[in-house]
Length: 152
Length: 382
Image (cartoon, rainbow over all chains, first blue to last red; front, side, top):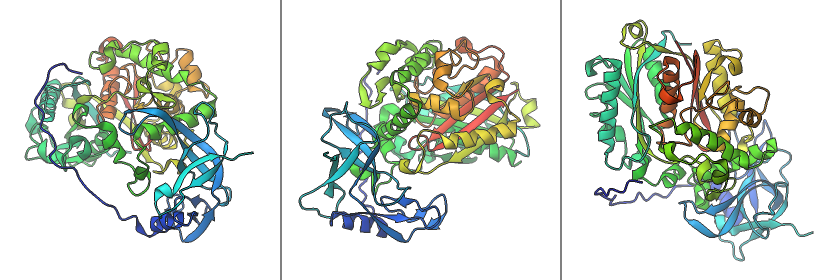
């Protein structure tokens, strides 16, 4: 970085926005409030999209068939976060995972979730995981609090 | 296939480093003026201008409205793309190929010192779900791709440091690159600050300021310019699914498809033998290996083995990123155009200390989107 200081003018405003999630995610969030995870299935390639999408890009088909997934699945990918989204160091690293849920057949898109109950250096692709729910779900993303390894 | 051939006939780039002392406008004006001088043309010879920037980087909507004057676009046909400088080059080439214009200016720029890059980049993600987690930025998205690739290829994380070490060593010969004074010791890179595993501070692009300009011309005009035309022999562009969960992250399918189109147009059938140098937009170290495989630049199937054998080094058989690549300097949205200009310089023999000998065909690659969703590949030659 340059040592020289130049006068900077700040942005005086931020850009507030609140997006409509639309009917598909609206139902998804509402079902989370019932401790349920739902997706939509493509009538052609049979892929189940979780969270639900309204169209299958590859088949260019509208998706109308709803599927309820199990709240258990397998870790298919992960990263251990040592910083937050803006780059500030985290006191405790967090494991961010992609989890493929059971109950939707062979082709199910993975869902994001935080993984707890396992040390960052012990986490492994293929681990069996179960969702841990909020005590009082409200129909929000945080209702599905995190995933943890299935106890044997 | 283009109806008329299109060539790079001039170029200029600023330092791809911190330029706190400059405004965007000043940086653009200086670079455009240098490019016109280098091409031996005046402003009135320019038919059309295609800029690349991003409103979130500029903190300014329709930000090209404000950069028309320094970009020599005043009272001209001008437009802007928000992807990468390689996309701007593609669209400018199409405007020339259409026959509507003979000379185009491609101007890519951003000032990473003025915006919070990972906040701006997180804005490319789905606001109704992905962004609601509050974790996702460009780096954490790419980290999943890195994990998938390393696991699939059974590679240790240290291979990422080896990619960066090669590129930092090259950057020491590139006076424009931010990383020109970085240590190129793989051991130190492998211990740099962990961000989102397996990615670390030095295996992720360093966000810089920078502007890059290319002057394009279509034949027959291109043959009458001051500089030798470096033809776009082939160019291809491809998109894949937005969602990481809908892609096979172990491969770069869209880069592969883009390359296939570029090679077909250029008549390249054996890229690993015919391409003599490649400038790739490896925003993250693993992407250089993935791209080398997707673009068919390896001997055998493992980019890591090619890297280890020195084949991608500055003195190797197919040097990749002799400039140091995006790991050495990254003005966001400018990176791909820098790659194209570097490729043209290699064909011209004007790359300076990082020149590769006897380059007939050079490849340049640009990308945008989370984990390189969208790719452009171009092949340049005399």
